[in-house]
Amino acid sequence: MSRWVRVATQCGLLLAWAMPVVAALTVWQFLFDTEYGVVNWLLTELGGDFRGHSWLQEPLSFFAVATMVVVWMSVPFVAFTLYAGLTQVPDDVLEAAEIDGASARQRFAHVVLPTIRPVLLVVLLLQVIWDLRVFTQIYALQKAGGITRDTNLLGTYIYTLGIKGGDFGTAAAAAMFMLALTVVLTAPYVRMMLKTEED
Amino acid sequence: MPRRTSRPVRVAADVVGLLVLLVCLLPFYWMVTRSFLPRNQIRSPEPTWLPLDGTFANYDRVFSGGTFGDALMTSLSVTLLTVAVALLFAFLAALAVSRFRFRGRKSFVLTLLVIQMIPAEGLFISQYKMLEGMSLLNSVLGLTLVYVAAVLPFTVWTLRGFVDGVPRELEEAAMMDGCSRMQAFFRVTLPLLAPGLVATGVFGFIQAWNEFTLALVVMTDPAKETLPVWLISFSESRSRGVDWGAIMASSTLITIPVIVFFLLVQRRMVAGLTAGAVKG
Image (tube, rainbow over all chains, first blue to last red; front, side):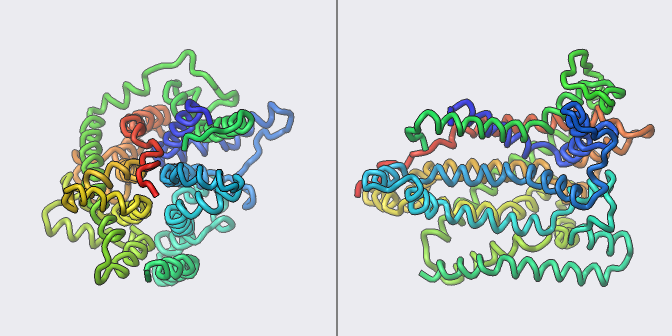
């Protein structure tokens, strides 16, 4: 990658990351707005008829938009941490592997991947934990026109039960379920880590 | 890794990079341009792509309240203090976990991991009570304390991976040459961790800078609120509808310090420092 593209991409990622959450969610709502949304306008200009199309009505497209927002908000963190990890890959080892006849794919699998493995794993783990309890993005989109009942995720479901419905017992039970799910999903990683700690 | 790559590969990488940039930037661009638009143009059937006839009226309204500067100062001091303290402790802790074998090391590492799974919302009340007991409510120090606690597990954990990547032989060589162990850590290992320190530093900075809920709980005095809290109360204080233009303007202003911080530390994120340091 050319140097200026690299710095520009880094800055772009950083800007996306640094944007206050309130502003980010507001802008995404603007972009996908039913009446005045830029996405609708753009698609209509391109030939489709998307005037007045609601992206948040259908659960499927609601989740597509939500996924996009969540991914947009988490890519910078992952990219930055992994990039920092990649700078740790020793050049001379890569060169040695190249001289010994390793192909690009082999170099990646046997030199780069093992070096960034600890960083890669922790990022993976954190993303699983964070995305499992994603709340703000879903909540904001629901308020912007989603149908709450059809689009609840664990986080917003617990909120609806407890804070809105006053049924704290059930909400706490659901939260326990979420915790158990987190433990189950992260167990393989934790096991693997404990094994490497042995030596 | 500045490696020789063939031209087509580099062009392809450039194109992918620019695409990522575009998707990342669109919402940001939208925020900045909206901040220059008068109210009736922020949402209109025909979107305005370039605010050529823009106005600074939104920015005027942000500053006219007079409280933006206070919030900025609070946010800056809390954030910078958090980053500095967290990085120092994380560096030492990462060294301990990575370089020494001691009793309780495994449980310490496991604790770091488990802490991340506890929902932050579950801790608010105890954190509030704790700070109240130490009379640190509404103080920069108190908020810094809880922020450091919040970012430390991740910082230690990530830095540990980076310390593992620095060859132990370098420290040993330094100690042979007459460094004490501490000197070896600070003069040899610390500079080599620069990329990791930048990554975790930026993480800590943005975490502390954009944190909302804890700041709301701990800083009950309106004169002590941080920028995210200020932004919410500002957006809710308007009696006639929400002032989107001013929200976009203040959000743009809030983003600037992060960029400045990143540009200051970004050069340290260079690679290949260890390359060739250890002769086989």
